[in-house]
Amino acid sequence: MPSRVWEFYSSLVEYPEDWVVPGIHSLAQQLRRLDPSTPAIERLESFANSVEPLGVTELQELYTQTFDLSPMCSPHVGYHIFGESYKRGALMAQLRAAYQDMGLPEGAEIPDHLAYVLKYCSVLAGLESKADIYEELLNLILYPGLSKMADTFADSTNPYKYLVESLLIWLAPQIGIEVNPSA
Image (cartoon, rainbow, N blue to C red; front, side, top):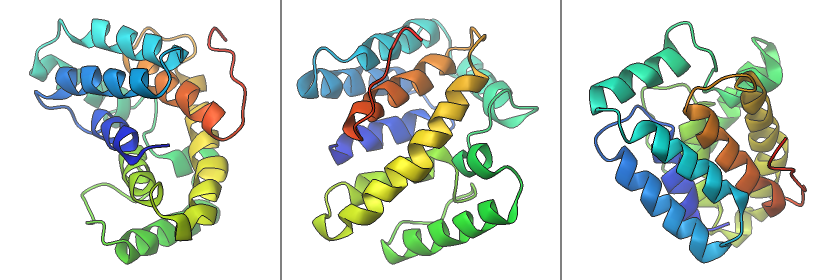
């Protein structure tokens, strides 16, 4: 999975700025080049259609309502897998150390934030020497966490639902999982 795709997805799950809509279209182009038939593109286009009419301030409010203030969906993949447990704390410590080892800057969010995990994936994707870590991250953390995030959006009309679904649908075949995109 090309690191550029991870970078685009990562930027789209961060607090939005005025580059979000062009970023969505750039990601869609990347996905079309890699697999023009992936249903992930359709979900990404649904996300674009939902957020294009919004101004930056409205999109920032939507992001905050979705992920921050009384969130409908936590952006922390570790939380979706482990809840508030010791195992999540251990995961965050491991991620923090791994980010430091790879020279990734520590940001304002905690290490299991989806944007940080995706940035880490973008670094690991091109490193053959880290293929086992990359595979474990995708299979044991990212995919299960995204699946639970998608479940929280199941009955929602929130536009971020489409972004999470797009990422999940595109990731699944990369790790050997068949996904029914209409489910």
